[in-house]
Length: 399
Image (cartoon, rainbow, N blue to C red):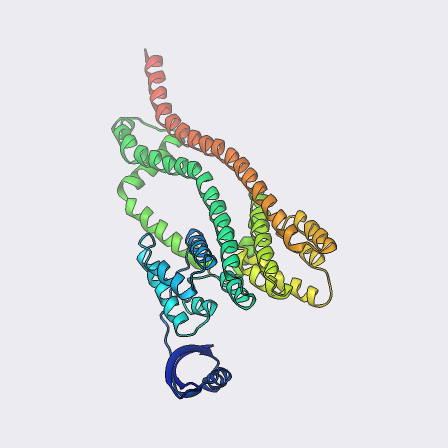
């Protein structure tokens, strides 16, 4: 749909202007006619969009502030104006809220105004607000979505913080090896040059050391090329689907990923279903929030099965990538008529399970990284000491 700046006459003959979404000028004319306005002129409005999506913590803060302000009796226009003037928010955020407020003042619905900002707001939030606009409970939905994005942000932060120590160990391994190869090993080269023959491990170590010392820029260029290659490769949909499928079946990591995806999908579907949207629309929106292209691809069949008369639990059970607990819980919700509450329950349980699985995964990674470091450093020490020890043996034999 296009966004049009228009001029029109109202029922009193007064000329007014504003912005409205429409398929074309004919559709715009019909929409204004329903509001008792006569279109005079219209021009397609090139709306400045925000190309980068807001993070979950920003979305949570936006929803919480909006819900609390509207719930306390503040008008939508006034609430958005307060948010756009909030000094605790970043300049880009305030600019975004001001742009939305401008559209709302021109008569555009909040959900449409948010959609006009490009990718700044996720489809889930836009559709939830659109549903609340027709039911008149925007404040409650905003607070509900604040809680949703707060949980999503906390889960993401837990994953990042749990991986901090393994990342530090990985960086430490690279730094230690770089220092040894670039500075320590060259100190022994003059000693090794006097020896008639060197063990294979020492020869390999010296070759690597010389390469690091003299051709270090090749490593940087190689790392950059590898980064670009992998980024391009993952941008190919077919490869991404295969990678996401393989990720789900890895030992330990695969189960953790399944639990996280299940929790994310269940919480999203619960929020959408509780807002009154049809189940097909809920699934079409919820699938985009999972974060795994292989699972998302399977929802074409899920939606087709539901349209053909299957229960949601039966259709979800066929999806490769969710835990079995999800379909079982949905079945109970269908039988008792409490699907939204059962989905919320399984989401909370999955988040607890994901935290436990993540802690176990980290407990496996830490010793593995330490062993890798020990093997690398051990190899270097053996490669250095072996020829020195051999030379001492030859001297002892000669005497």
